[in-house]
Image (cartoon, rainbow, N blue to C red; front, side):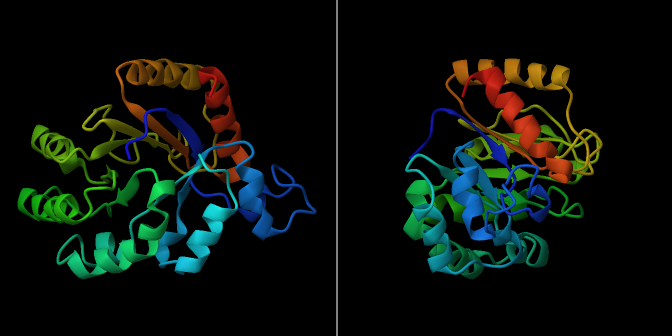
Length: 247
C-alpha cells in the first residue's frame, strides 16, 4: 500500500559508535532498534545489501517496533553489483521471499547501483519489467552512481515504471538531480562532503524542509534518510529536519 506522509530516519540503526551519543551505555545492541523507534518512524536496512537476513530476524525486527514504523530494505548487491541487473528473476525471488511476510511494514526498496553501471536502456527496461510484473505491490527507489543516468531517457524510464530517482546529496560525489519520477520521493543524505563524517548546516536543512513541504503538498510521499553516520551526525540532522517539518 502506498504511503502518503513524510518519513525521516537514518540509513540503519545498529552503529556501535552511536553508543553514548544516542544509545544509553547500558543498552544492549539487541535493544537499539526499539530505542531508535521511539524517535524515528523509519529506517533503511543496510544489511540486506551485504547478505540476506534470516526470515526470523526480519520478523523479529518488525515485532520490536510500533505498527506504523517502516523499513526500507536495500536490494542485494548480488543483484546490483555482481549480476548487474542481468538475469534477475531467481535472485529477486530469493530476496523477496525474505521480505514478503513483512511487506506491510515496508517502505520503498532501495536499488543502489555501482558507480560503473552506466545507463543502458535495454538492460534497465528488462529489469524494471520484472519488478513491475512480479513485484507490483512494492515501491522502488533507484540510486544511480554514474553520470550517464543524468539524461531525460533515464528519467522517463523511471517515470514509466513509477520508480523514484533517489535525490542523493553527497557533495558532488554521486550524480545529483532534483527530479521527481514517481508518486513517492526518496532522498539520501551522504554528508555535505560525501564521506559520511560531516553534518549539514541549518541553512541546508531549512532549504530541504521547504522543498519537502512543497512535494508533500503536491501529494507525494517523501522519504528522507541520513547516511552521514559519523559522530552521530545522521541523528542530529534527521532530528533537525523532523523538527522543521513537525513530523
